[in-house]
Length: 263
Length: 312
Image 1: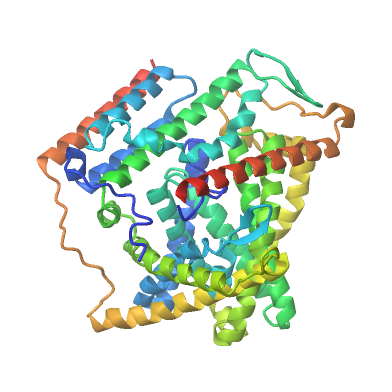
Image 2 (image 1 turned 30 degrees about the vertical axis):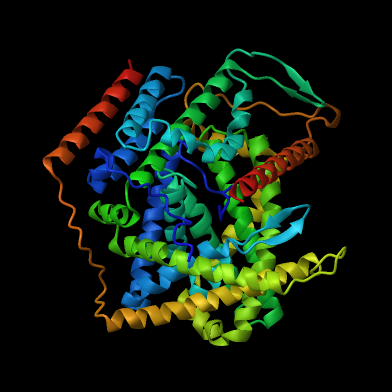
């Protein structure tokens, strides 16, 4: 069973791990919102936001550089913003002629590009830290407390729970395909692209029906155990004085950051 | 690593606050309607069904098939879900998938999740289900062809709308982002269409009861046909227009006042992007776009290869 393939939780005994999941979710969303509210080129505020991330890392017990090391996941998407460098506004910095295309990077464009990347990089780190210090069921529970419809959170909880089961199912399908795709040395196995796509399609159809029928069985099993349309949890999650204190400190820091950006 | 980030999941920071909130509002309304609709038809059974189906979409993305030169296509599954489960259920399923991808893997941001759910869930449900519903009484071959067309168009529509969102946020220049995104997704969409058709053909054979005309009609009214056909026509008309004549699109946006709202004040209207020996023609922007698309594709393949090597 690939029970650990998707888990992003890192266990440690730390103040951040003990914090109520609602506070963590709320502060993460507030932090991302605050990044979106920063205008381009307010480097001091971006720097302060980064300090906040480092600070949170420090109290996670996972090491100061924890979220930094994993923060390059959104980097491929930076390509989408590259064209912002050549926005024709402000002072041109250089003129590059690559073959038939003339590119003129401008200081305004460069500032915008850097700001977009910084915003995204800071937000991604907040998300990485959130899932590293919060167990997934606790996080889902927090969203429920924050008024996300229970149906949606329960579906996501189910998705998370059965992801591992269906991953094993896919692995079995892939192994079956592998074992039936023998080839003589020097010859390629398999047919044309269409044939290969059809095999993948049959596997997808097969997986679909297995999942569909499994959901029937699961529902019957749930009914047999007395399911009445609600998931129950043993963890009650009550806000302590410490949780409230950290929530207000965090919000205060974000407000200060916004004020700094508007000076 | 068992999955790779798809280029349609926009991360936080790439869309302006106004665009993000705008699409959150639409998405919240649509998801709210989907919840009440599936509540009526499925009752409490919807939780296990939707949850497992969302896990199916997630797991199915691992079903890759070799295409050429070491690259492989993989399956997104939105259209298949929309046709077999119905549009409302599909919206919920994709919402759960995008939600988990954003929360757990930072594959797509939180603030921009509304836009991501709209692009990948609501548009796919409209086009995928709407087109299929319109030929529900035709023979099997026609239905399969339309399903494949729907899968391809849904991918293109999502790419087109994501490009427009990036442009209106002042993140990308229209002349670059539209041809690049549409170029890459035209290829991704073909793989998606092939697998969707094969999977549907398989389900028609194994469980025809899931896909007979009566079962499909029950899942969504005629409104889906009009919506799906309208969005499809818009996508077909807008894609060549936007990649061939981005200035025209800019003028439209300007007269409608979109640009001022979407962009910061110091952001000016973009001038022309020319390839000198081709002149200022639609051809030159398309050529520039194709070059961009190839570069982007190359970099994505490279990154994918690196990720794979690190995992093994």
